[in-house]
Length: 137
Image (cartoon, rainbow, N blue to C red; front, side, top):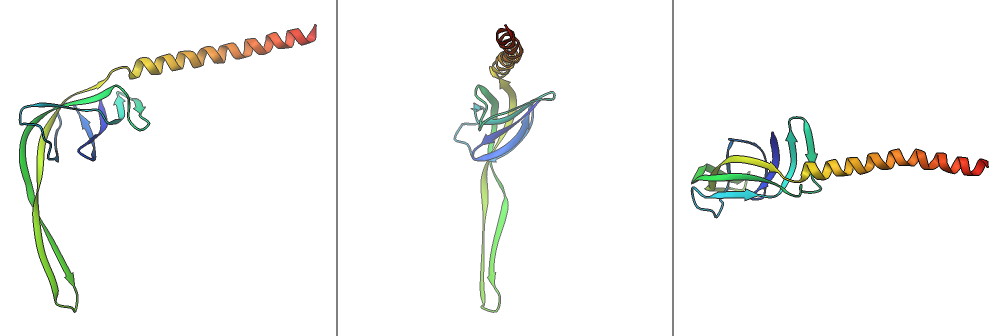
């Protein structure tokens, strides 16, 4: 089972027990956090796509640590002008581990919609037959 979820403005493909580095979260180390913007769920081949997000679905995670990423060098240059500018930064990151993916309510709602659609399809031919019989008499 995996899910596409939005965490701190970026989309990640996550599954259970996966460790992910995301932009710095405000939660403390060791605390649990839940993400509700789940855009896609794959449960052993049955795919559920949200419009834009799946209602009732969430991804549970635990904050492991806050850290800084590797140094990124930003170098700007304009040729033949003598312009060179060197700058850099280290991004603030949070390491999280995915503890579980819940899809509460999505399967029941989908099953109800399919059942209603099946009843309508079965009822449509019977109604047409009844109208034809009335017109022939």
